[in-house]
Image (cartoon, rainbow, N blue to C red; front, side, top):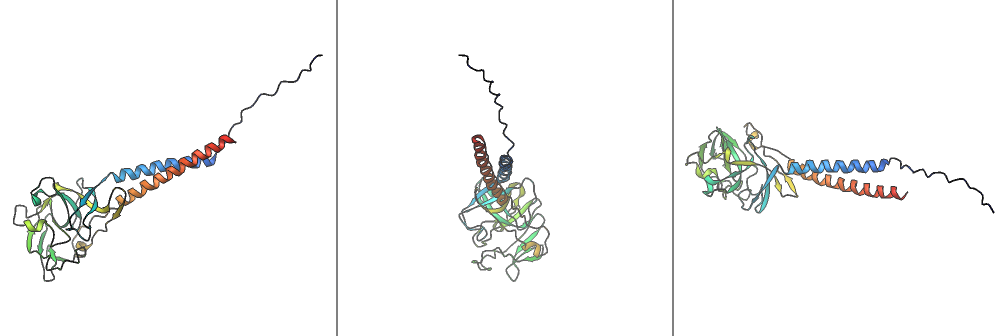
Length: 251
C-alpha cells in the first residue's frame, strides 16, 4: 500500500513583537529618575555639615543640632549671614570651627549699644529679632566699639550673654574681626545628610537701611527632595519595565 503524499507544513514565521508604549514610558521614567537623583546628589555634595553643640546660637540653631553650610569659594559675606569659620584667634586652639552671625563687614564701624540696647552699625541702630528672647537685652549688651578691617567680618552669637565672639577681642590686633580667609562658608539650613530645613535669612540690617541682603539658599532642601524623587522615579520605572517585559514574553 502506497501512503499518500501530504504537502509539507508551511514554514513557521516568527511573531514579531509590536512596540510597547507602556514599556517605553517606564524606561523614560527610569532614565528621568537617574537624572533627577544625580542632580540631587551633586547638589547635596556641594554643602557641608557642622555640629553645633553649644547654645551660643540659640534659638536660631538649637544646641546639639547640626547646621548645613555652603562653601564660600570666594563669595561675598553679608551682614546677618551665619558663618562657619576657623576660630583660632578666638579660642587659641588651631582647627576649631565655630558658627556665629556676621553683624558687621569690612569697613563698618560697629558698637554697642544705644539707649534701647541695640547695636549700631555705621551709626544706624539695628533691631535684631533673632536674638535669644530668654536673654534680657541689658544682659547681652557688652559695651564695645570696633572698626572692621577690609577683608574681615565681625561676628557675634545670637545668645549674647553666652557667646565667645568678636566682641570680646576688640582691644586686640584686628579688633576681634575674623579674616574672610578663615570663613569656610555660610550656613543656609539646619539638618543632616537626610533631612534639611532652610533657615530664613534675616532682614534686620536692610531694615536698618544698610545695603546687602543676607544670603538665602534652598539648595540643601531642593537637593534632598530631588534625590529622593529621583530614586522613587527610578524604582517605579525599573519595576514597571520588568513587569511589562515579563508579560510581553508570556504573550
